[in-house]
Image (cartoon, rainbow over all chains, first blue to last red; front, side):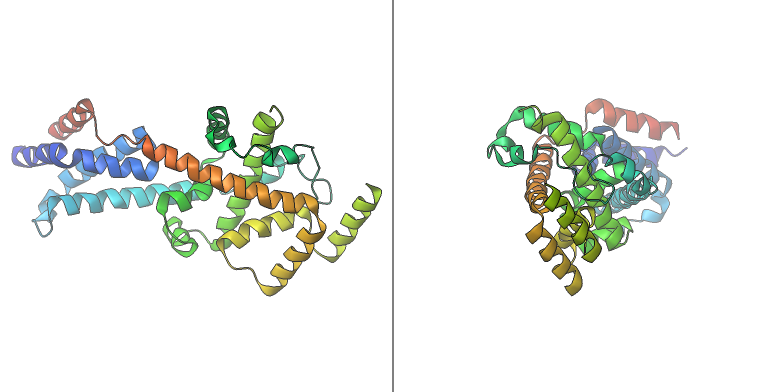
Length: 189
Length: 95
């Protein structure tokens, strides 16, 4: 009964699917997430087709729907497990002493020993691993700058978090990254 | 060693712990510090080798993060597979 609408949407899937997917992947870096978002975009478009009325181009309209989904996704990830800020004590356990000062572990000098470490495939694999160990919202916090290409104020607006929440998450994430890199890399080279 | 730990205790009473100092190091990269914060951080990092080392490590992590995302970007797939497109079309047809 909706065959006209179905044909319209099917045509759009073929016309704009790639561009929408490419944008969703660029913003999420997750294949599955990007595919789901594109599917969701077309479902929403199908359900709202009556309201479209060609006021804008279909492409603009579809991108608007997709961008809303991306924003929701960012907000959800940023809010996820906000309690994990409290777990930070446990995660960074052993790095600081009872006075919250550094527990020196002897790996410090290894960090600057190899200037070409960034070209090392093994190091990059370890870094990938350490990134995936981070809780989602912390990973998003340290990545926001590189994913959104925006300044702090705009990042906080986009993620609906306060500036202090933002830098505190970054602080915790980097302590955890440091710990992971020292355990999995700097203690081994 | 003993002197260093006594020094740290004193620093703690007067100003920041290393944990607080490293938090300010990260904060500074994202938002401007207040005058007292700037002063506390400067004094702390001047006296604490571990925290000035952390500052270098933090820069290394930033560089790694930048590279990590550049790498991910270059791996980006630019198109949706035909089967995924078909899946969406089938889904729409069922509605």
